[in-house]
Length: 383
Image 1 (tube, rainbow, N blue to C red):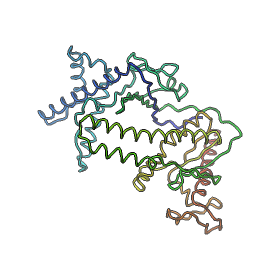
Image 2: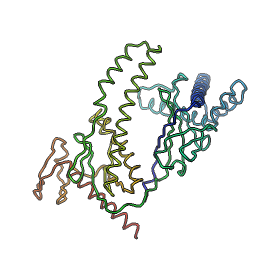
Image 3: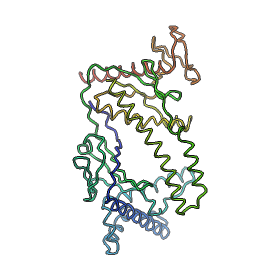
Image 4: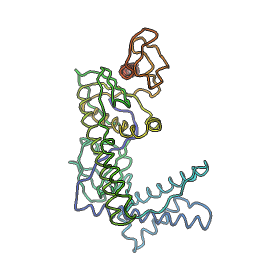
C-alpha cells in the first residue's frame, strides 16, 4: 500500500554546529550571485529593450565564476547557480503575466545579502548519510531523523538549505516518491473525520476534538512584539532585535501547534486502521473565514497525519471536496440542499425523519464514501 504519487516536502532542522559559518557564507554568496544576475539582466534590458536569454545569463555567470577575484563563488555549486537563474526567470514570468492582466506588481529586485535566505540543489551537492547525517558540499551536519531513514531511500527532486532570521538552518526535501506504509494491523476500527470551525474535528463515533487555537492564545504577545518593532528605527540594531523577538513569538506558536498535531496524529493512528477525511479547499475557506482557518492549519495536520499513518500501517483515505457530506442523510441517502446554510447545525431528514447533528452526520458520510472508494480499489485490483 502507498499514498498517491504526489510532490511532497519533508523538513528537518540541522543541529547546532561550529561549521554553520560555512552554510551562512554559502547563502550570502548566493545572494551576491542573485544580485549580480539581476544587474546583468537589467543592463541588457536597458540597452536592448529585451529580456536576456536565460542560457546566455548562465554562460556569463559561469565566466564570472571562473575569475580569480570571484573564487568564493565556488562555495555555491553550479547547479545551485542554475537554480538561482531559474528563480529569477520564474519571477519575471510572473511579473509579465500580471502586467498583461493589469495587476499592479514590481519586477524582481535586488536583496540585501544578509536577508537572502536559501540555496537549492538538484542532483548534486548533497548526500543523506546514515544515523541522521547530511553532507552539503563535503561538510557534514546532523539532523533529527523523524522519518526513520526515509531520506536515504527515496528519490529526491531538490534539496533546499534555508537560513531563518534567528540563524537556524533547515533542509527542505522535495520528492514525488510514495511513502511506503507498513502492513495494516488488525483489530483497529475505522473512523470518518469532519473538519470544522467550531470543532477542529468531529468523529463519526460522535466524539469531538477541540483545537487549542494557539495563535489566539499567543496573539497578545504577537501584538506586544509588533508594537515594540514599530517603535524602532528601520535598519538599526534595535530594529533587528525587535524583529527577531517578533519572529520568536510566531515560531513559538507554530512549534506548539505542530507538537499538538504530532501527538494527536499518533493517538488517532494507533486507535484506527482506516481514517477517512475530506480534501478541503483551504484557500477558499481562508477567504471566507480568515485567521481562524490559518490558526487551525488543516493542511499541516493532514500532512503529519499521513506520515504517522505510514508508521502505524493506517490507511488515510481522502474523499473528493465536492462530495455533499453535510447535505446527505447518513440513514437513507437523501440529499437536502438546505444544509448548505452553515448556520443549520442540526436537521431532520424530510425523507426518513432521522434527526442529525450536522458535523457527526458529515463524518459518518465521509467514512461511508471512503469505504466505497476502498471497495472500488479492491475490485479494480482483482479485475
